[in-house]
Image (cartoon, rainbow, N blue to C red):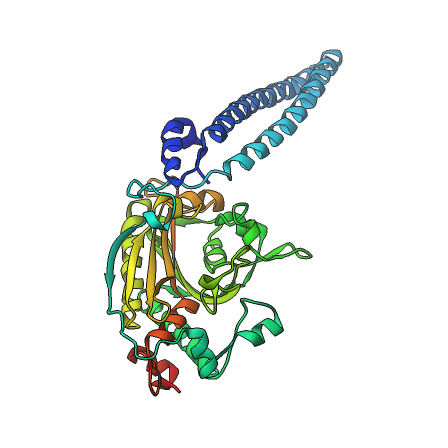
Length: 422
């Protein structure tokens, strides 16, 4: 959530920057500033009334001691009127504040100055690429390979739940488990503390990281208990520090977690979502950092390099993309996407997003740190997929298919216990 003081001081600048995300904020900002003026005036009037009540309370005590009961009763009558007015002002303030917050949460995060304008993925910028795109003799897509080697059963998933919920079997299940352990080990070696969070969160947690209200239609909701199934481990992991004030020397906080993730993906259909390309339930390992504002962009680059090294170790051809404004998330200030090449499908598949949210999430979470002067400041939050499994698995299966089976990258063999799926 954007800081209200920043909106007051730099409303024109914010409106201009949000246009990079193709979001016209001028009308909402105007309403916010008007409501903020009403809220501040009401608060001033309320504080004045409460101050006057305190003065009367002292005066009443003095009058009673002096035996001037009639004057004390008259002062009590005035206090009663002031209390009634204060109650009305408090109710009005509560309503105005609620209306103001409802508008504030509609504003996306301000994009970083390096974010290019654009409307879709076509306008993203290639940062760098690596690896070698294989030339395949056999050229089967992963859904055919999954059936051939009996490692992923999409039809059984439909029977048990529905489309987008595959069942992993045999070496397919072992490959999933191996990748999860491999990613977690690489992350903990890089200084991230592993946590195992719940996959259900309450409304406050979903609100804190910005999934609500923006992505409410993409989340699975447990109505009876008012819980949400998480779309990413970012939600519970970042919320560990909701309503927390850290000491400056505790920064950065680095965490990693494996969870199943759940996304409704409403309206998704067609060849681009076939097989593992887009699922409603999938496994993902996440990295999260909480940083000092002055070091958050250095941390972002370090996270990008970390994810890049993991992708390299899997021997997959990849590219890193800096997203344009129109392709960025609601909450992000700057995002890098990682894509790996699927040789059988002859297309790039997104496998990770690494983002800096600056203080956007912290403002919602009330996540602060105490600086050297003892003042509280908003921390910066960052997160990245390290990595999402489905499309990694798709690329591994397709790019490594040989006559005698599917070759496992050397770095994974200690985790799988086998060199080939055959």
